[in-house]
Image (cartoon, rainbow, N blue to C red; front, side, top):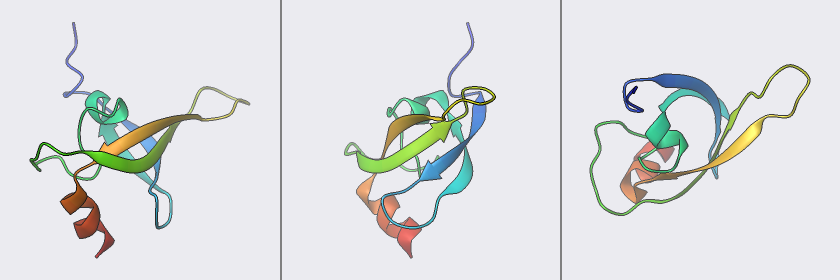
Length: 79
């Protein structure tokens, strides 16, 4: 069985504020189990951090996923 942390995928990240951008995420980040902003950050509190959108195939709408982040990571990313 493959590990969700080892594999990444390209998604469009739409933060609550700021412009959408393409980022690579792990399965844990996609499923709201890890911070979407940083990979080496720590903390127990995760808050809503917008959505990522994955492609679902040709001629179909992207699928949206709610994502989370540490409050301090969101503040640092906004700087």
